Image (cartoon, rainbow, N blue to C red; front, side, top):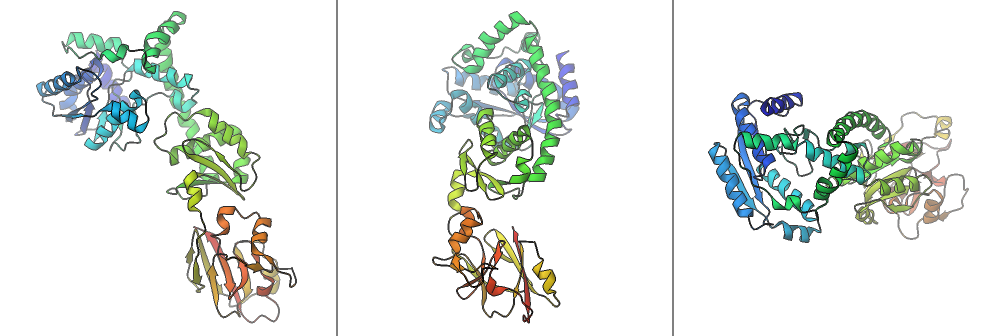
Length: 465
């Protein structure tokens, strides 16, 4: 009966393809041994190419015996087996991780090196414990989904992770082992309540069962319901993300249109922040609600130039009309960059994070030029001989359009215009000699103004790359 149930689950979620190469994580315990045995029984139907994988964590005196047992069991069922050893205790210490997290990370990095889709033996009881654990940590819908039948992962396992036993109760697995005389190894650390998950399993869940004997089934149902709700919400979140995001997908920062961001409900703002964290910190698990909520509320009233901590080494920064989420170190990368290039016509000119295009107009109207409201486009007198694009220099002064001969410090102009601090030393300036003619994207100089006496007009456009 268990084989039929697992077969049905595999078909329902399309976990296996015909002719697939499948790596099976096998510890030697009841769950993974049952999984290995079941997949050998399904091998011919799916024409599977199976390989067992066992990582010796070197945490217990009998760990080597476990490795030998897995290798023998796999060989007896004609399944190749790869066994490796890692000192998880040292790995945890070096990476400042708990033993549980270090072991999990070491296992999946091991699986990733071997490639192919990885089958792991998480069962329904594991699912109930995971949902409860996420609930106690204050997780949202994403965490209450628990584990998925098939999922991707941050360790780049080639074709993801599948969990064929996710709807099978632990007692059914134990009965299967007895029926088929599998004689699995028993990990003594599974009863050690110094581990958080073991405390849930051996202390909290039995107490909850006194309130509702079906608590494990209910928690698994919560996972299934939450998974459906999550899929619906992701559509809404992705639509919002596309509407407010202005940074390239492969950028080392996420940039949002601040006005559009602030127009969205708080719940959606939190969801977008969470997605930004996942994009920039793909190895971050169980993102806590508190820093996300705190950052979202700070952004609501933050002034340009303000920066606040987010989590996992990330910060949020308000820069003019843009909200940025990036690594704290990324802010230091946005440092002064001296840059100078001649202005050429009719071809895009890359300049730091911008692109500038200049053309000579064949025909033009003074009224149309005077009414131009697009700050990314400037129309200027084309009689200057040596136009260049460069970044600002110490001592630069500027005569903004309409100032009638009065110049001001360029630094003061940038402050008054609320140009983000990290952009000021990178922003293109169109200059002739030492004369600033256009603070690109912000203001034209009085000295470059087109008049009725102008013989040649340049149209210059700046775009963010």
